[in-house]
Image (cartoon, rainbow, N blue to C red; front, top):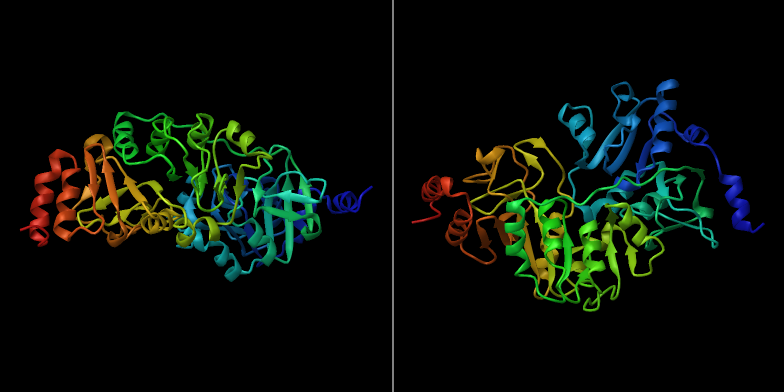
Length: 435
């Protein structure tokens, strides 16, 4: 038996045995989204409730709706989630009810935030150990290495269903306090079916994207529609926070080969992955795909080292000044800032780069305009007006970069729903934006 195999046997436990490391008042940091270790977290919550452990804080980026025990009302006061993104329907509801908290932040800051928090315990999902004694953080490289480096205790949940991903995404058995084996599968995110307006918006974006571009997609129907319309492009590269199934479709079509990138040449790089089982199988042990922490992937100065960066993200509403809200409806939290501003800035600094913010012109069947004179009171500004490059709706594309306030207002009003343009023009004149 090798030394690594011996360590493996010595450190293998059940989730319930691992939960005994937790004490009242602990700070626990977890890998995120499809990299959440549910068996460990549920065991911790079960013990905390059974033994009346209190004031345990669970820090994560995105709380995936997996029915985790930490969302149960009876777990309140025992294990309380703190989100770095305010995403996931269950935790979003808790935040709205004042039963959970969140940390406003950019995605590029998240590993540094964990260094500041200094969790005593780190929990993470991992792929099986290789012959050299290394586990991979799989779909969640975003914060894996940082939380396991700063914590005193490192607990892994190891599943054969989790893909092994190269890059800055590994931990050695000697660095692990204990682990359990499980049959957990990463949550699958199917490709969305774009609607008519999604396709109209995507068409306006795709015609601006050159061959050889380096792409980043956000979450939603418009980015998926963009991916479906780019299969005839050539020599595309991928440097993205989210690696999604619409990108896999481009890889399969031969549109992506990463040959024109200036950094990570020949590699598709990401900081978290969410998609279909086919995507997870594709990234498994694939030397053409690498995962890195968000301090690297989302650093605007790193992003900008590639030429022709194309950043495509969605918004909830914008105003005629060009302010973008992508994370709240008024003061009601819907998601977080995430990496949208990181990539807007990176694309702006990239040679030939472009940043697209996409949204439908209306919501609620046309009853509500998503382009407003001013943002809804209490709305959280995700992208400041001075950073915005292009806004796209089904009615057109507004180029705002380096334009005057008057030119920007006119361009934004021109892509609003026709029924509100007269009122928006009146408001613009009242604000002194148009003469």
